[in-house]
Structures are given as structure tokens and as C-alpha cells.
Amino acid sequence: MLRLTLVLPLMALFQCDRDETVAAYGASDWSWVLREIDGQPFEASVILQFPEEGKIAGNAPCNSYNGTLNAPYPWFAIKDLAATRAACAALEAEGVYFAALLAMTQSEVSGDVLILRNEDGHEMVFKAAE
Image (tube, rainbow, N blue to C red; front, side, top):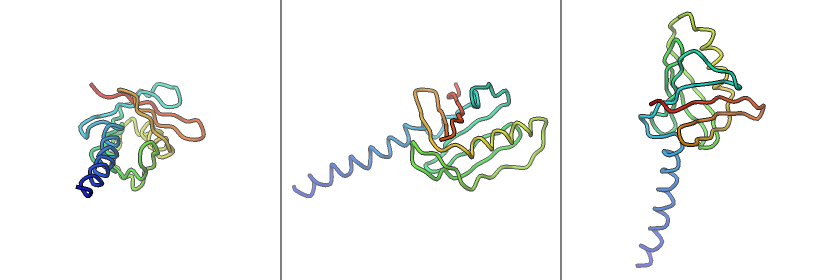
């Protein structure tokens, strides 16, 4: 009985960590739509997803992308960001998006809003897609 008593709290601890990670960015089928960067509306279409633990993916204005999320919530660090190579009229906006995304170091989820920010005061605001 003593073993069971020790194992159950440990199982609950590991389950809470997993639930917090899933809850942080939403279920794997959630999509986050970029609304603004540094307080300015971002007019180009951008989607950010967290398809599985430790991964990001999405659609930038011209290309689809994916990468590795290299920090536990609430920290935010991306490595190995890769994108397709299509050109379009919004390629400059895409460069702005990727530069901002790679500079983010913290994340906060509050309901249907995801905020990414860094120590320099830069911020990206996403809203859950409906």
C-alpha cells in the first residue's frame, strides 16, 4: 500500500505538467491568428499552431513553416525554423513576422489571446481562430 501512496502523487504531478502545457497553447488543433506586432495591426494573414509538444507550425503571408519550440511554457524559444520558398506580394511582411517571432522569449495565454514578448518590450498578440 505504501508504494501506491507514493506513486499516485507522482503520477498526478506529471499529469499536471502535461495538462498545463496543453492548456497553455490550446489543443493541437487550435490556430492562433496574428493581430498585432508592437501595438500595430498586422494586416497580412499569419497563423501559428502548436501541433504537438515541442513543435510549432503555421502559415506566414507567403509560406508555410515549422520549427522546434525549445523552451517550456511560459518561456518561448524557437530553433530550426524552416519555411517553404514561395514568393508573393507580402514577402516583406513575412520577413517582419519571422524576425519578430524569432525574437520572442516569453509567452502568455489568457483565454483566447496569446501574447509573445521579449525583454526589449516587443510584443506579438495572437487571437484564437474561430
